[in-house]
Image (cartoon, rainbow, N blue to C red; front, side, top):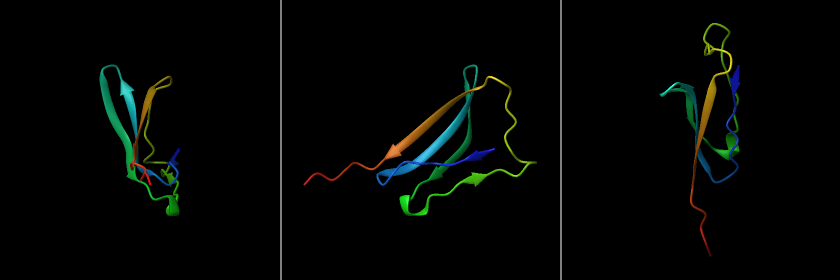
Length: 68
């Protein structure tokens, strides 16, 4: 299992949460630098164990674009 944020230049942060009924659990939440795109690969013994059919929520944070 891996997590690879991809936001382009104005992206600042990306988070991934698993939904369990009314509860949300953060799986990964990282800062983002478009010049250093990185894939976060979990080790076999530390990958999140999630039941089949689980829902996910992805949250993104952007920098406001500067207007001329």
